[in-house]
Length: 164
Image (cartoon, rainbow, N blue to C red):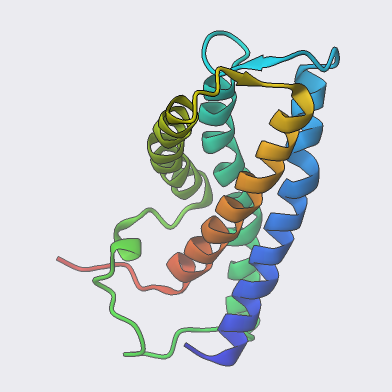
């Protein structure tokens, strides 16, 4: 992988992470202006919020990053030289189009992160969180996932479509 691609991935990942550090706690506040205790399960819960965020956040990150990546590729600033990466990687089997890629990644993230959140909190005996801790929780996990999603999106856009 070229230094230009690594630098682009870093910039996209950091941008997505920083945006999510700010936006996700703000969205949590908009949904809970009373700053009420957030239960682990049930309506308005940590689990429900995590599932919804796990789908929407990767979709939004994907739409922005895929568009920016295509512009960089078309301008010739980044690219994947022939033979430098296998077209048979798992990412190459994902859709290239932004909406489909974002929804696919979002569903996968939701299927992984939501149960892990429930299991971890249950094992720790956490029945819910005061709002401030819930907002901190969102400010911690969403930027990490956003960075990874941005990386996957850039790499997917650089990979060729597999042939069978």
